[in-house]
Structures are given as C-alpha cells and as structure tokens.
Amino acid sequence: MDIQLFKVYNAIGELVSELINENQTAGRHQLNFNANILPSGIYFAELRTDDDSEKN
Image (cartoon, rainbow, N blue to C red):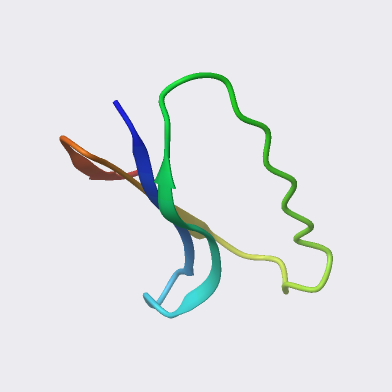
C-alpha cells in the first residue's frame, strides 16, 4: 500500500496542513508535525493510500 496523501483539517473542515502529497512506497516512514502554532481544538487527519481513503 503506497501513501499518497496526508492532510490535517480543523473542526470546521479547513485544511491546516498538507504533510504529504506524493507517492511514497510502502514501508516505514517518519514524519514530524509541529502543531505548536495551531490553536487548541479538535483536528482530523486524512490518510489516503493507493487503495483506500479514510478520515479519523
């Protein structure tokens, strides 16, 4: 399963960060995300792979 997209949205659905927007081969990856500049609240992540799309 290749990773294609990883985005973070705020509680009203606005995109706050696009961390990955390219094909990355299956395997182990590390990603640093510094949320210190974001206000406190609820955020949602979207991870899209070559065979599914799920928001958590």
